[in-house]
Length: 521
Image (cartoon, rainbow, N blue to C red):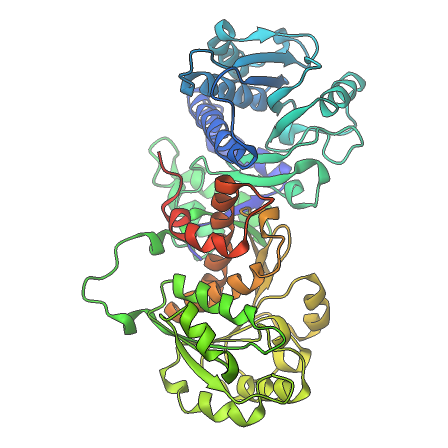
């Protein structure tokens, strides 16, 4: 899948950076500058979810250690000052955990650039801050926390702060006195502890600093080998060393999805294309008891870029659905006495299946035995790629047939079907950090957040994935990865626009275009 970057352990990241920089402080400073600026921009952008950074008189606290993370945090503070044009600009307090004389050369350089516009403090202001940026240890941390640092973090954690940000990894990781971040920004490389369900990390986010330039990889080893050989200041020997480092010490199981996954969707479409060029997705679902899910499937599929969308739904619901989404083709399906899809309606699908590029089935079906028997029959005979969601996530249905498939369980559904999932399936494991798995590899999305903790978000995701699968029926893994990341980025945009508390989940559909284009301005 294009646009994925490796996730490394802390030891692997140290070794990688040693090979990448060769001890060249010019290159290290350039990377630190990119990291600090990206950190500031991301924090200001994400802070919009809780009302944004104050236009005037905002207050920032930087917690600085000795090394690169301190430099990143100090450069971020300077960036915030430089981008603020208010008459009363932000106040920046800097607290050095080990004193300013302990700063390593590049961090000291970052401090010299910031010092004229910041104040050194010995203790945080009990009145609190709008933004705290923690850059004490990062991935260089080795437990236990020094007593003085633990005491400082306890004090900071008790402050009234609107947003707390950690650089790379929260100081202290899982220690009782660890820094409690709202967001942790992994700079350049995502390190594995960030994915270990750390309560101190808040939301993990990835800031791409260009360590892994884009190329469609045959493996992580190939992408690194090819790209590093293209850099003028890294010779072929070093390229091979990095390749060996990754292949020898990095299992290759974990990677992070980046915006490069979505790049093909953000470009020009062929001027000679017509609606058949972009696939035809069929959606089967719904019941009188659960009428909303299949409608949300369809609305998302319509936004996915698919050329045609046909939805097979209980016949009593067709008129209302057609009025809500006239762009789709609606086929009424005979109903059971309880309002589910009856077995006798299967011919409606079979008569049209030759037109289908991808099939989504499961959302809002309910669990009537007759309906599930129909679903099992459809999946058993399907010769197009299938997305199985919600009520179709039953062991016998997941195991039925031979068509390529994507399954989209949350934790409870996964426990039910786990033994039926085979390596060739694309598995979307939904949760606070959703990931896509196939053939022993895991692709993590670090986008989205609690704004998606609402009924219906999974139905939108299933429809989005199915519409993408209709456009790339030969590549279920990429369709799944694109859908997961795209929804996450749209959810971030929605949360920044209206906040996470009062959002309506279908509102994120209006932010899909923004998510493809990336931050504007």
